[in-house]
Image (cartoon, rainbow, N blue to C red; front, side, top):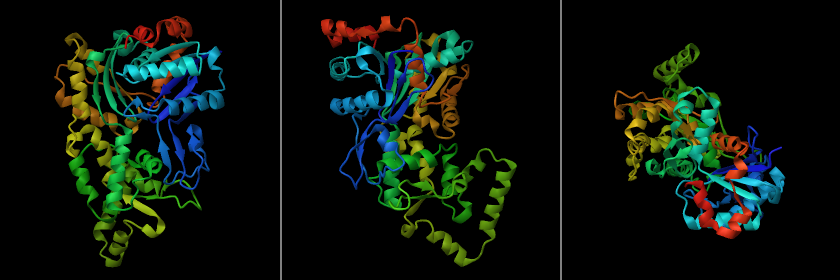
Length: 438
């Protein structure tokens, strides 16, 4: 059995396991939380327990905007994962750790101190996410373009930020990396503001709004049309759905009131005969319904505070829209499509056709329905006609980086690539870091 611990240390989730395995043993929040009704802090996997009531819970995160700002808290979370979840002995193991691109040297030093001086790992290898994603995709399709050309453009949209990173022969080309300061956390915060302004004050409900975002948000392929539909009353509005807040007694988790109602919008994009008929009937019913009491009933049910629930309409697609058009919100950022074009243009012209044809999407935000389709629609007008555009979403965008790390950790040369504890003690952090070509 491999004695290499692989940790994909994300801002939202930590994926940890043993090198050589297909899936991580633990996928847990990278934070601590304290419920309103308790004085005890819950850590990592404890936040996922069925009995954990996270209503108005206070969250402490070691990572902010992609960088470790609280090494002590990060150390506590790692310690819990290593001892309780993975049950490994660090002094007898090596560690493969992912680190964000362009991490500051001061942060690197504090991480090295934790790994070698606190946990006493015998070896360390630090990798960045894009190179591991490229490695995994190349190994999955040995006869595909990514493997043959040894070149790809990895779009990693996670909790803290979004990167468009060209990768060549398993090395990330740092000079070509473009960053968009928008991630899952910013999207959740925007959703909080919209819902709090329109219906119920949920500004303190971080965990709850993450759940709402993941279950109900999607990417629009035609924003102008969808905004018109979202203004319609009753059944004509294909986007309206209701989310029920936890009451702390009967249930401690929020949930979608009518899951089928939440999926009605899909008929706009791929109308199967059943969905199309259903939608048509509902639209006709809405048009022909002249009963004023019925109309009043629908209006009242928009926000039913007595039942502790709220409705969502255009929020469902306006939140992910931030990634594609941040300027609409007054942010001085370019959209994702232009970000990709700038990353490609920073590389040698010989690489341009290959990069456009081997775009790989990873990270939790790429799980929004229609994400890849919308990105291709936005990207095509910006790319010269002579180039093909091909976008691939990983089979599991959340675990893709970890699987690449697991693959690398199981290679025969891995131990030779690591910095050992003896080398760290002799040369220090800065000299050792030069080995990782970051």
